[in-house]
Length: 421
Ligand code: PLP
Image (cartoon, rainbow, N blue to C red; front, side, top):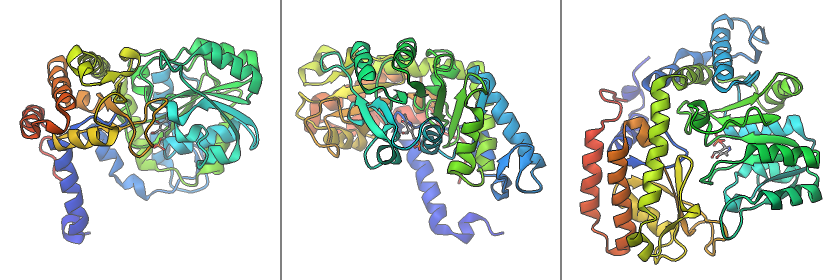
């Protein structure tokens, strides 16, 4: 029972170094967040020792009386948070949640219709190397070439032609609200089921600062670790238990998974409790305000002069998509430049991107992690200006000066004070 530093100093060093990296840089990957200490504690607990195949009250193992309490709390809190009549908190990740949803709603060979990966969709919505692309007859919709928004008339027309079994609403890179009412009516008209994957914006929905897909969708899936700010994992919801609850449960276990990760489920319960608080709502509001400030700064005349623009001209959510098609910098160069100044973002293909996916002509910049760190309008204004300066000056940027501004911000908002790994 030696402590980690003694038993495995190499891994202890990785943990310490990663904590240092998170503390000393500005984390702006839109799919990341900082979990509360209580979530770290639940996830790093003895619950990892327990096997609990099955569901609360109906397990295939003895000794589940305590983990049952945790799973029931997680399930009840998820239902209350999202106004859902059904929740399954067992998916290990967003991808396994999505595999279970398709397993429950469709049969291999059925047609599915989701947002193209190249226009902001997710791998599990039909990418050809993913299970979804291999098992189903994939059709993809895209965004309009001028507006970069989903064109619902075009989507309706496509759905009526394809007649898919499932229409997928949801994205990994799209800066605007989806029109769930339109998705519902298109699904109804074309005889499809509607599955919404709210992995990215679930925390905003929980906080009441984004429309909820739950009333409109047959099934909703999510991750718990993005805007929702919980442990790395997945979640499935529906308005009511009927008609899909039984099939979804069976698709998760035994369809996709064996034993649930009870330490992660306990950590989800904690995250859902936090997400129901007033503090969380205020954090979600700062997340949105930060993204708007960044979008506005990166649309201003001086950055436009450097060939930089913002897709759709702004944002409704926690991220901004930067279009570098007219900039001398490509996505890879811009990502590296910001990294050298202490800001972590990811390059991201823009729709109709002329560059290959490993290079791209865009950046995805998100605010959830910094909002969790405590950043508000003043700090996001400073961050936006640092990014703008870097993108305007490009390879000639004064990286040291920019890094000093980043250092001032990280020092002002210590991350996990007192924690050592
Ligand atoms: N769905 C969407 C829309 C996502 O953006 C992601 C993650 O990037 C996932 C699902 C998959 O989640 P995970 O990485 O937990 O498998």
